[in-house]
Image 1 (tube, rainbow, N blue to C red):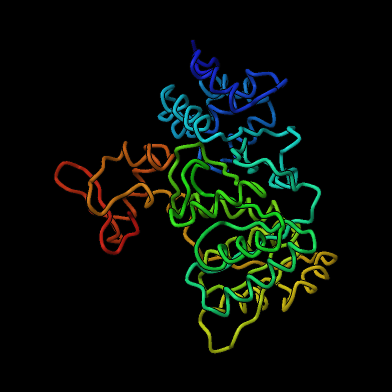
Image 2: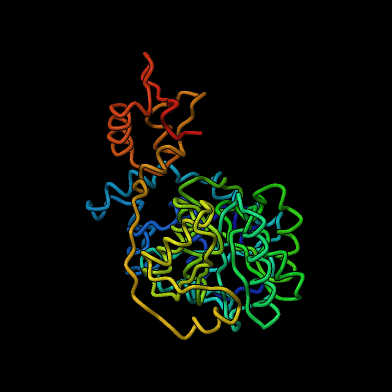
Amino acid sequence: MTALDPSPRAAADLAAVRPGDSTDPSDVYARVVWNVLVEPGDGVAGALIRTYGAREALRIATSDEAPELAPARARWMPRLQPTAIEAALASARRAEARFVVPGDPAWPTRLDDLDDHAPLALWRRGGHETAAAPTIALVGARAATAYGEGVAADLAGDLAAAGAAVVSGAAYGVDGACHRAALAAGGATIAVLAGGVDRPYPRGHEALLGQIAARGAVWSETPCGAAPTKWRFLARNRLIAAMADAVVVVEAGWRSGSLNTAAHAASLGRPLGAVPGPVTSAASAGCHRVLREYGGVCITSASDVWDMLGARGEPSVADDRPAPEVVRLFDALSARSPRSTTEVARRSGLAPDEAGVLLGFAELEGRVARDDAGLWRATSAGEGR
């Protein structure tokens, strides 16, 4: 057996998460392997698969061919572990999740706009199809004010009642208010998670996510069993933006993660709007930034959203967030448990040499410290967990 072939146990679990599947199982299994090997949005893997197909791309990736892939192989190969692949499939089977690949009837075709950075596959809980409905992404702050949650609920309820599918990230605050209001209106809603669909996050929304799965769908790009990390939240935001016909930021601070979703919406040409708030409210500073810097449309009601669906602009986007590799590096570090460069590389999905360089720069900035054994930990100035 090679990386291209499932074990009997993996083959049985793959059949369980692909009931009645007539697709070539070798190609589907290769996508399961890729799903475990790469972090979301890996453009090198995406381009390789678009060129050769999932199975042949996996053969090339695990061979000595194409020396230009050496940096990518250094990221991927530490994760090529049969037990990890089997565990993802077993977890999906237990959660009654489905493995969805491009070309499936359930595949959200809007995601193809992401080109090489489109997901290689998706996991889904729930089966209510919403592809034909207009899909509106409503996003905002976790630490929302009563104003933010109230406006979010009004927008989501009115849009869902009118037949739109409301997509959001299932977080506390604005996201949760949107999902609950859409469900209360008898409409469909979609949650996109940063971790596995078998790991409800936040834990306090476990019951809500069950309701979403029953009425709409819960999607994730990461394999079952995977934990949400800062990088995966940022990568998840591109899926929320791409999955939607329009994106509205309901309430967000100046540096809210919702602005990352807005940036993706702008780059994809999705209609983008924001709800204004009091000029004295820091909780709405990000919304005002969307209106001013991203060319967003002022949204005060559901009718404004419907009007916006007919307008597409080309707003400029300003984003001063850390590079994705740096975010992933600090996701892999801990302030309490020192880790080797190899372990940091494995956890972050970076090549060991790349992780070593980034750790060196972070040490100069005082964000990480190295002990006498050569192990790394995040300092109080860093961002490790």
